Amino acid sequence: MLDLEILLRQCVVEQDFQVREMLTWALIRLPANRVVPRVVEELARPEPQARRQALHTLSKFKDRTAWPAVAGRLDDEDQGVVRTAWYSAVALVPESERDWLAGKLAARLGHGSAEAQLSLSRALVALGKDVIAPVLAFAAENRDVAVRQHVNATERLLQDPDSGFATSLKSARREVALGRTRSTKG
Image 1 (cartoon, rainbow, N blue to C red):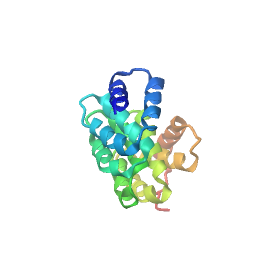
Image 2: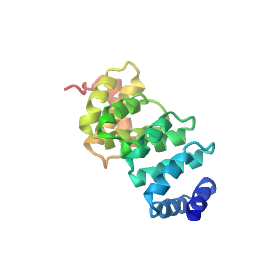
Image 3: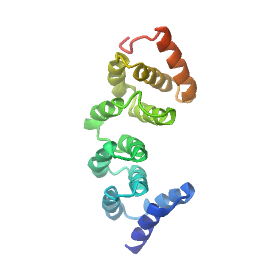
């Protein structure tokens, strides 16, 4: 499959986001039984862009056989790859691994830039309230103010997905500082 190799090579070097989206679109139109194993191989490449693009492409295929490889990228050394892995993992996680994934993601609450925190919150919210409620309740008891603020902002995002995260984070900081947060346990 010469087309597959050409597309994958271009994914590694293409700087334009829109072009990379078109490359993904082209890849998902090829036979999954050939593309998915080859894209999984891309996760071992040294270039972070290759790994990010592979994760993005795998999330579009929704082929759960890629789950172990995607889960392995949740601890990648490149934070951009990690953030892409969050979304891919949520898209591919088997039902039996959803609680594990929620815990893995929740361990990063309170860390990173506002943009990274928003990405993490969106990934958690995508897992669903039933799955994330226990991990948010546990994290809400954390002594670290940044963690509690992030939990509060995530809960607000869960209640109103269209709300602005920056506003939610600002409100969460205010509520935590004033000691007016309630436990997510009820």
